[in-house]
Each structure stands twice: as C-alpha cells, then as structure tokens.
Length: 390
Ligand SMILES: Cc1cc2nc3c(=O)[nH]c(=O)nc-3n(C[C@H](O)[C@H](O)[C@H](O)COP(=O)(O)OP(=O)(O)OC[C@H]3O[C@@H](n4cnc5c(N)ncnc54)[C@H](O)[C@@H]3O)c2cc1C
Figure 1: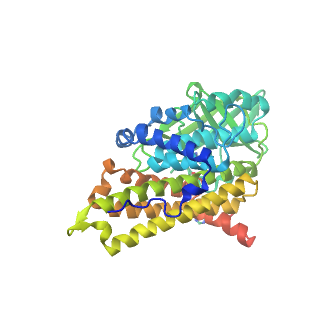
Figure 2: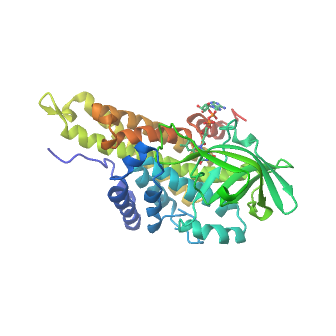
C-alpha cells in the first residue's frame, strides 16, 4: 500500500525554512516528551506542569511579543506553535496559552514600561507562571458586565468578587484579575504570589471531562489588598480587554487546527492498518468519505489561519475575521475529533490511542475564548453592522 497522504494541499510549502524548523522543534518536544507521558496526568486529573514547563527551553514563550525576553515570532510562527502543541495535547496548549497569550499578552499590551520590565522577563523564562481571571460564576459570555470590584484605598486596591474557570490559578505566581473600579472603569489587577495573600482562595475544579491535565480554579477574593501600582497602567475599558482577546482568539483558532490535525493523522493511519472483512477499513467507501471530509476540513482550516496570520502581520486583521476563524476551526475540529473517535471503533475510547483525549479537549476549545455563538455574533456584527447582542 502507498503511504497515506497527511498534507493533501501541501500546507508545508506555505512555510518558510525558519518556520518549518521551529515547527519541527515543537513537534519533537511534543512527540518525544509529552505524548509518552500525558495520559497518566489526564487520567489522574493532575496538572502536567513539568511537561508544560519543558516548553521554556524552546524559543516560543511570549509568541509574537517583542522584547523583555519574549520570542518575538511572526504571527504564522506563533500560530504554528499552538498548532503543534495541540496536535498532541490540549491541556498543555491551555497551560501555555493562558500563561503566554492571555496573561503575558495583557501585560505586554497594557502594562507600563516598569510593569513590563518587572513581570515579563521571568514569565518569558517560565520561572513565574501566569493566570488570567475574567470569567465569573454569573458572567461568562457577558464578560463586559463583570461584578468583581476594585476599590481604591490609599495606595492600595481592595478586591472583592468571584472568578470561575481560570487556568493555572491554583498554582500561578501571578494572577491577573479583571474588575471594575468605583467609577465603573475596567481594569486589570495583578496579584503576585496570590496564595500568600489574605483574602485569596483558589479551589481546583475537579470532575471535568476536558483538559484534565490542567488545573482550573474557582477563585474567591475577599477584601484582598494589592498595591495600587499593580493595576495595569494603560487599560481602562472592556474595549482594551477585547484587543487582548482578539489576539489570543487567533491562537485558539490555531489550537483547533492542531487538534483536528492530530485527530486526522491518527485516524488515517488507523484506517489504513486496521483490517475487517479481509481488507483495511480505509478500503470501504463509507470510510473514505469520512477521511476525505477530515482532509478537506483540515485544508480549509489551515488556509484560513494562514491567511489570518498574513492579515495580522499586516496589522489588518479585524475582530470579526478572528472570531470567524476561531468559530469555524473549533466547529470543524469538533467534527474531526468525533469522526476520528468513530473511525477507531472501540479503540477510539482508549487513552492509549490518543484520540479520546483530543476528543474531550476540543469541547473546551469550542467554548472558551468566546463560545461558538458569541464568535458568530461578533462576525455577524461586523458583516451587517448590526449588533445582535449587547
Ligand atoms: C477549559 C476551560 C478553560 C477556561 N479558562 C479560562 C481562563 O483562563 N480565564 C477565564 O477568565 N475564563 C476561562 N474559561 C471560561 C470561558 O471563557 C467561559 O466558559 C466562556 O466565556 C463561556 O462562558 P460560560 O461557560 O459561562 O457560558 P455562558 O455564557 O453561560 O453560555 C452558555 C450558553 O449560552 C450561549 N449564549 C450566551 N449568550 C448568548 C447570546 N447572546 N446569544 C446566543 N447564545 C448565547 C453560549 O454560546 C453557550 O452555549 C475557561 C473555560 C474552559 C471550559
């Protein structure tokens, strides 16, 4: 039998030699270090911190951010990093994305020079791990109306409220909490060594089916004091925060493509090797229809994020384009994971075959950084000029 074709539309040809080299570095780490070890973490629900921290030896932390020890990658390279991580595992993608994208990205965009000098270099070395706390128990998609407050008292802010779902927050060295001040202005407030702070509690959310090798937290803030200097200097509205989310959402689109690629590659190999009725199951027409659907969706996703990276590089990417890319790729990745699970038959439910984990991880990808519906609505608003949600 001929070798199965993984890269049908020659996505590889769209990459520069430097981008291919970076891709291979990340792929080698994920294949050699993460793949053989990740299932134990997933099964026990323990955060795969040591596996995630190994990424600091690669020139990738901080993605496209410049200076302060950040990788300073072009947008396509930054996307490829997310693709390669998530092609093998979604939990590592979330640990990395929360730290390097959401938290470092916010500091990089809205910190003062002194704040960037102080927080970014140790984060770029992953000596200090970041968490990003926006979502609340009663404010998910409606994040513009968060209830957490930050009251100025002398040279401190006093924070009160609840946050739900932030990744890394149980163990993070820095937690970036989003809150409103007494005049209703939006702000990002950095908690340093939060577990030492009176009034901070972060409880791990157990019993999950997705991203099980991460920690997500339920946070309570009760009269928690932080220095006023820990408020991000240049951020005062939800519009500012949206700029961070737009950037990281593009990374989640790449994450979805990586998950889909991982699923497709495993399913294709399996279908070509597994025999039933005296021949490989890939020989059946119904099976080929599924594999072609996956290959077609994968090519469409790859071309979409590739074009998105070009637009980002030119400074022209719009929130609607980014949201549509995230929504499209997450929906197609969900379908790819379901098909791969199906193609592997009963073996598809076993962690050992690496599809079951991706199958559950894609559920988080579909929901976080703007749900499927919210991203559709952001794109809809851009296309029509009419906001269908407030
Ligand atoms: C694994 C994981 C990691 C996460 N990490 C973080 C993190 O690090 N930091 C953080 O702050 N948050 C994090 N989140 C939270 C995530 O961002 C939220 O789950 C997401 O914003 C959706 O909020 P919700 O779950 O409360 O759903 P809801 O907003 O309650 O939505 C429920 C359903 O209603 C739909 N819906 C809501 N409004 C509308 C509307 N106007 N029109 C149509 N449909 C609508 C939604 O699409 C969804 O299907 C994480 C979540 C997960 C699963």
